[in-house]
Image (cartoon, rainbow, N blue to C red; front, side):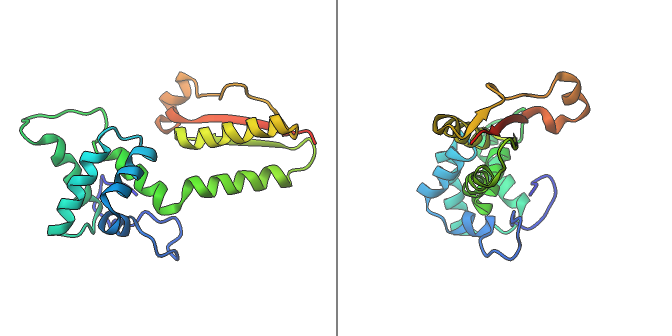
Length: 184
């Protein structure tokens, strides 16, 4: 899942499924890659990255994480001695590939709908999301449940970690918690 160390370009949560990140990187069209990077990664250079990947894979298919990460980093370092990003330029692309490989958006929607349907009266559903797409799905499903009269939203705005928690656990920085209670 990480590009910080050498590994196969896989990204599957379930290794029994056939779709890997390498399959996506090596076979999806320019348009589909751009969509994945723009929507799932919120990458503003989605077209530029997708175009470079399509050109690169014509010469050599992507098989490793570092190969793809280097391809993306090279896009931004051309003609510059020192380029600086707060994050590695491949971060959002890898996130998008992971989401697409595992169908995370689709699976979250299905799982949350099932949870809402099967929870007992007075039961609570709590969702911790680490990405704006995930948070949007939870927010919209809770909002729809409120409109239908089946849920009471317990968090009008998502709860976010305080500075102390982020200092102790850097990964918590993007976490957002939403909660709802079944009322019918």
